[in-house]
Image 1: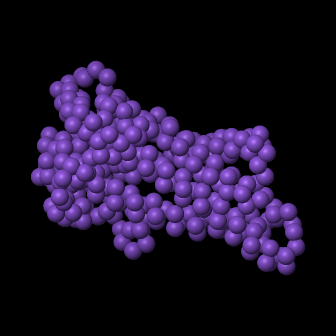
Image 2: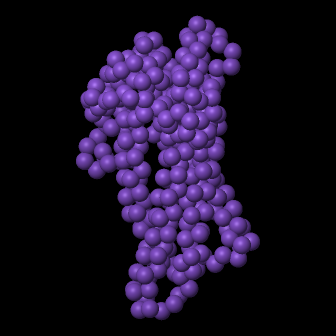
Image 3: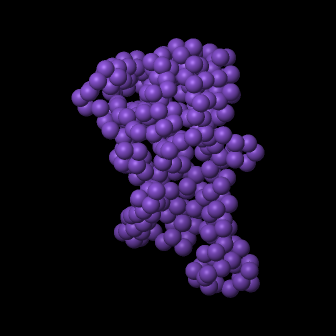
Length: 301
């Protein structure tokens, strides 16, 4: 856990340092609204894309996932051949296939490009699921990759980050100016930074709701894509099996949204969930029109 937070802090400082250097070289003044918008965009998109660029590395490190290079047993050979077949059907490059040690039934996909991704399954999944159910889970994750979900979520997060950073500081300046009676304190007073901190939290909460709404929509598409690649009944059976440990996850936050198992909750917590409730996913899958659009072949991502 401490390693995850240390990496997050180090990433933010690295992005901030890079953005500051770029703005200094280009002569952009962040005290102006135009300069502030450029700063917000560079920091917002820079952090999002840096996280995406190291997503495979960080996922392997934080989950302890072991990539299968040479299959050691029949189960590993089956995993490789199944993912290879599904990747060919979806029109993507062969992902790395890995296994990570975790008690819950789960799997995830990550990676910056469709042709250089990672698909990993938990040992809990291999113990609890039948081959048909596991095949559907793998198809679900391959669909995430084929649909370019990692890049799409990164772009959305970059836009949201930009607006949170920009609006918090614009509104912070206005409130600070009002409270100080219009006196110019250079925009660096304690009150200003306290206001911006609070606004970052408030706007960030709304931004998270938007990102999680899109994540839930994306999950329905991946379920339908999994049904298209592996079969509707297999996908439904896999989701029903997930109920055994649904809501339990040892995945780090960076990849949890791309796992097949989500959280549980209602009210405000539901707005911040990356996955829809299982019963909604199963109902949607039973009624889905599997016309081939659930797996977007040929999307550059």
